[in-house]
Length: 115
Figure 1 (cartoon, rainbow, N blue to C red):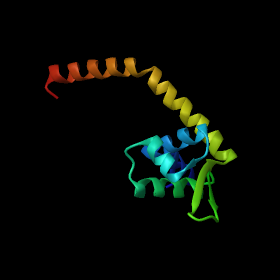
Figure 2 (cartoon, rainbow, N blue to C red; figure 1 turned 90 degrees about the vertical axis):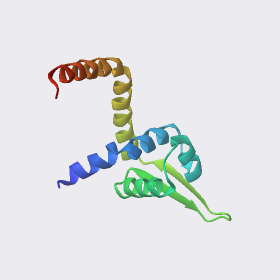
Figure 3 (cartoon, rainbow, N blue to C red; figure 1 turned 30 degrees about the vertical axis):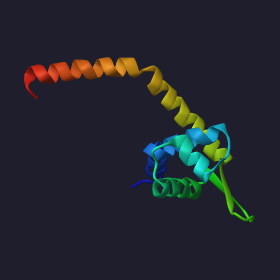
């Protein structure tokens, strides 16, 4: 697989999109980010954050305090990517009515032909 396709998959994965958009608001601690996103398992969020960190999109700041504190934020590269992902998410939201109409036409057409 081409390296750029792999990064594209990371950016547009279910949880990658939500993490990037959430981190555009502000840095988050892990538990805050998990609550902000909702319905993501601890394991999946950890994997997503590690992947995005490896790609240079997310910065992990572990503070040497007790109890441990880890904050996640976007790098400059991550902010640039997140802006693009957010634009796509906004486009999807603004065009949902047209998508639903197209789905209905498709389903009606397929139902009429029995396929």
